[in-house]
Image 1: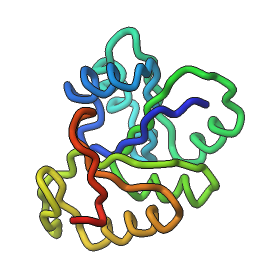
Image 2 (image 1 turned 120 degrees about the vertical axis):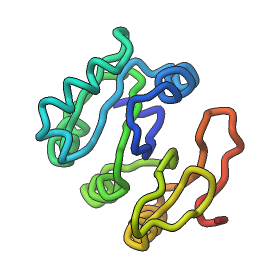
Image 3 (image 1 turned 180 degrees about the vertical axis):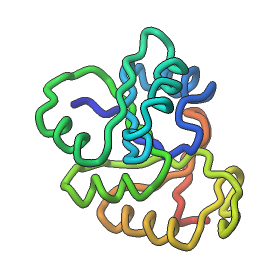
Length: 155
């Protein structure tokens, strides 16, 4: 498996991901990891329709992603997308190695506090991201590929 970008962004498939990140990463495969979306056939269809026709979009729960990761010999450049940092931590806990995770948009919501522009986190999300970093995965803040890379720990 050739993961060229791992990213947490609540919006998942949207203009920024489609234009900037796909062009930057040269990916032609998007793998969404989310236990809730995996069970929601309607939402899966919406996401598939939102992806460009030349991009293969797949939705996995954590267990199926682990299985896919272990057996996948495909060298197609792929983007891993997450809506929730919890699923990143669960993959890491299953020995899936991610060198870094980009934080994209995590919007304002009850119990969330502003960390920086476009990123609001609950205390629980901060704790999860800290565990991800402690596991050796670099947690960076970057909305667009050409933005300067900033470490989450610096905020």
